[in-house]
Image 1 (cartoon, helix red, strand yellow):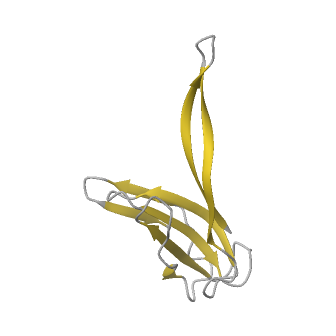
Image 2 (image 1 turned 60 degrees about the horizontal axis):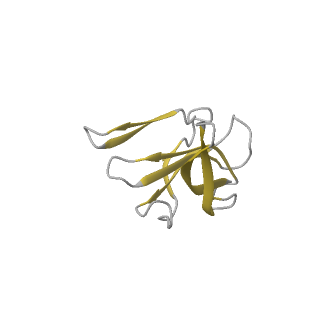
Image 3 (image 1 turned 120 degrees about the horizontal axis):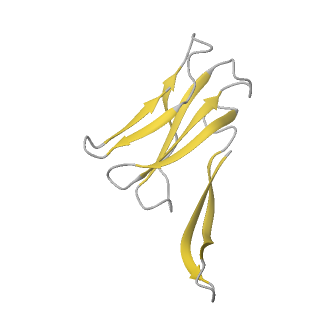
Length: 120
């Protein structure tokens, strides 16, 4: 299950001049839940900002078990309003017959090329 927390960080200063960040949670939303589509489990959640200002949530969807070996799919959701609402889950890459083929690794954002790259 991927749970998305929206919070604001507000700096607070103590009398001694020390500063710390105070996080105020605005809302909590479940983005990916077991049983969505044809996926029984989600692992390796990542939420990253895209160059256009939207948010992209990715996760490794494990179709039949939590084990590392088994059928997997790359699950993606996108928000264009700062995380208040999300587009439906899309299943972008399916490892089909390559049972050890998909492992979500790194997500890179290239602001110049205006792309989000997923290495798996």
